[in-house]
Length: 69
Image (cartoon, rainbow, N blue to C red; front, side, top):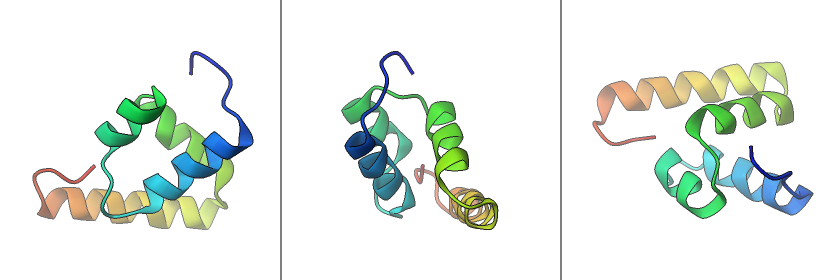
């Protein structure tokens, strides 16, 4: 991440990433973070079990839909 993110920005990114309707590309365009940075941020902000459940959901949806995250 190029510039440190404010707590409000972190909260917004987490909320957007948890949504099934917002892609990593949309988050990147709005906040200037890469998909890998989003995953790292989610890993640090979520509890371990919540992070694993989120990653599984993202992978499962990605396998079923061409343009998910």
